[in-house]
Length: 186
Image (cartoon, rainbow, N blue to C red):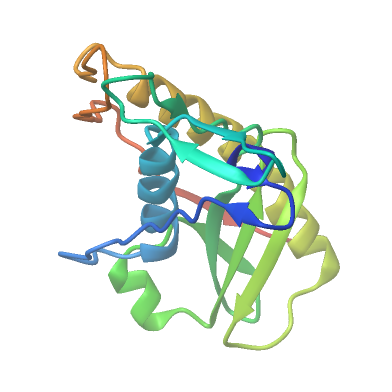
């Protein structure tokens, strides 16, 4: 992410997202992913300039002096989790904690709204047939596009408060992200 680079090979901004989990009704991976992406979508870093005789002197400007810059995320990696049952013959999107307690295994597909696969993580159970995996990836691509648009809509909501200098942000999520779909894979 070029946005975080101040001086190539020397100085870069480090951004951390800390999530504090208060409850887990199931599918924590997807919920945490959405929360982290929403937080990063509202992140602003201080403006900085590079100068000095050797071009290595970095000046970080106070938000009162120069407007902070928003983080640009071009392609949000969206986690879409599937629980599978019965040797992978039944696949459930967005499992609840009760479904997680009895599932045979889980697969999290991380894709962006363009359908590019960023990662796949499979936990537990036996292997899945490639046709099942490909069907899950197609479903994940559709869900990723939907979730991406909901995140973008939520963070651009009128209740998002900004001061003219500096970033004081309140985010309100009026949209429900959770949807329940079961797919019988043949």
